[in-house]
Each structure stands twice: as C-alpha cells, then as structure tokens.
Image (cartoon, rainbow, N blue to C red; front, side, top):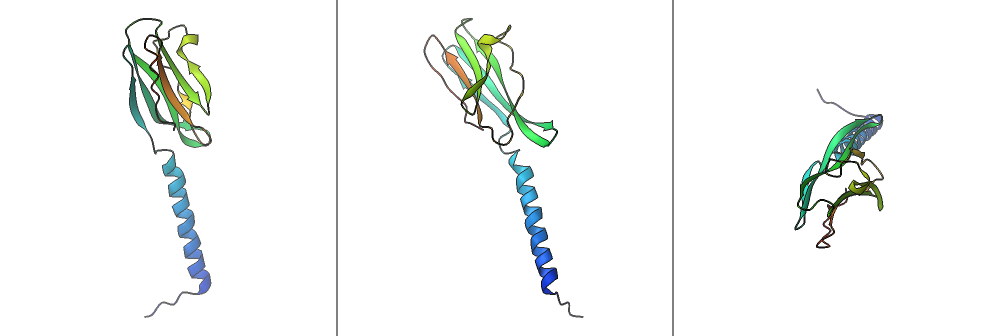
Length: 129
C-alpha cells in the first residue's frame, strides 16, 4: 500500500515541526547559564549563583551573590548589576556578609555580579547573563 500526502498535510507537518522546535528553543534558553561562579580579589570573594526559579510566566533564571571571604570588614563590597543599574549593594544591607536575595534574570535582563575590594581596587565581575 502506498501512502500519498497532499499539500495541506505536508504544510501542516512542516508548521507543526517548526512550532515544536521553537517551543524547545524557547524553553531551553532559560536554562543556558545555571551554575556558580567564584569572584575573588586579594581580600574578598563571593559566589555568583544562577538557578531556575518559577515565575507566573514560566521558569526563568534568578541570580544571587553570596560573599564567602571577607578579610577586612568594610573593605569588601558585593553587588548585582542588571542592565547597567545596581539592584543589590551589600553596603546598603544590615548584614553585608549575607547572600543577596534572588533577583529575577529573565528576558530583557542582562545581570552580573561584582566584587569590589576597596584596599586593592580590584573589581572582578561575572559575565552578564
């Protein structure tokens, strides 16, 4: 028995596969950069954490910065920058050595962590996500 597909069936199959492919890409893109990255200076270090969080419109990345070493209190400054704007600064917190809150890093956001060592002037940053 020979199967013959009409033009409509072929078009429907092509459109269906293109839609399915775009859904896979859209869902996979939020998972592109999960993990942890260490930022270190001579006297300070922190871990930038990126993980998936659930939001009303689906799963998206969230970021936090977690100080792990402060040799001289007051000399280390930890921040998260999103689209060029500081959205978290450890200097403004009651406990500057505590992890920042998780910040939304979904579509149209370009976020990265920064450690500033005021003794040496070193200022490593993570890659914007």
